[in-house]
Image 1 (cartoon, rainbow, N blue to C red):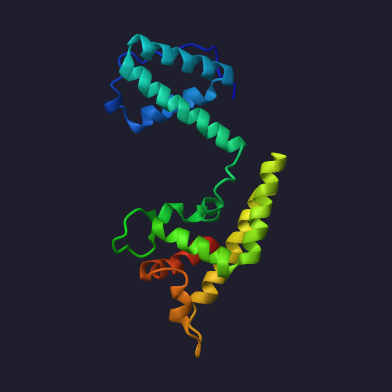
Image 2: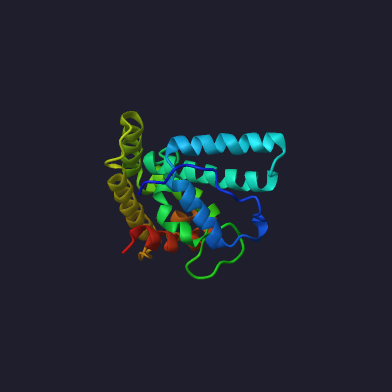
Length: 201
């Protein structure tokens, strides 16, 4: 969809604290439709307006939204490969909470992900983890993400399988000791939800 002739949007009467979510989304849609050159020009114009002290509230708000649009476009073109744990646990994002207090069924403490990631690399699925890291390194070297999603999904399934095996009781095995190698009790509480989220449909 091509944007029409570029012009600075007229938002001088906007009180950003009162804007509805719909209005903000419309603003983002408008900014996203602008060509990259127009986005850059608009960004410089609002930066200069702030420096001159003109429409500071509006300029700051629109500039913030514009930067989010531009940053989002960059991430779509160049998927982040510098945080492999984030890529692995991406399906869990809707269920993550930042609190360490007792959680409701289906919720996962964000702090539990790092110990699980470290366990997967160390004991749970070390070979698959190295293969995943190699795939990410290839993406960074070549600049193409053609095989990225397949690599992510492959490691997610391997991680789900490793978590399932260690979390499933087996007669005669020392499961509590094995689980303790992953992390403290609150991490162990979360790993069942980790497994279900990574295994997917």
